[in-house]
Image (cartoon, rainbow, N blue to C red; front, side):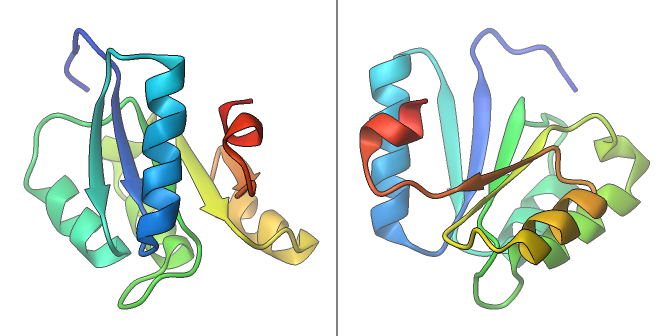
Length: 122
């Protein structure tokens, strides 16, 4: 990972409302960051293959069209280049089996999407 002056975050989520909530929460926490957004796991994977600069952290929605978060997570974790990349699954589901499966496949954190911005900022 190349050093960057400000945090570089990637959010992969097909829900534009969730993107807007995420952006609002980030703006309240810090003005000094870069956020890149992808609507599915395949677009994310294509981007990661074509870039030298890796994000400081990656948020993956679990359920997306074309390629979901779990599929993308598995592919990312197969690549040694991404071994140190912090990945959080960011999902509406809070089922214990989903949490356990994603953590077993290399996610560093599982976040259930909150319904309000205060919870998201925490």
